Image (cartoon, rainbow, N blue to C red; front, side, top):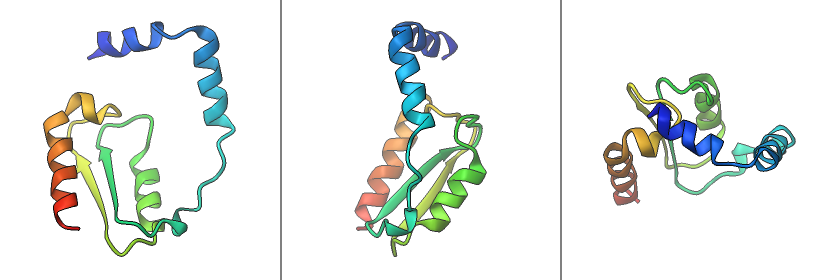
Length: 98
């Protein structure tokens, strides 16, 4: 996993990586209360980039009547890479409830 992430990062140009960091730093604050569509938030228990506190805040702020927060145990920030079958199952299960 570490080598995969390392390859993703060093495969980017420094200019491209800097532009991404700048875009994240200047991103507007999102009003999650305006989200009314069915909403599934999948979080990694060991995610060091998106804290559980932040995920819980987002989930609580969403106004959708159909919302769900799923926490993947033992998974970090790369949900689809670390636990693709579990992520697919969660999405499929959520869609079936709609």
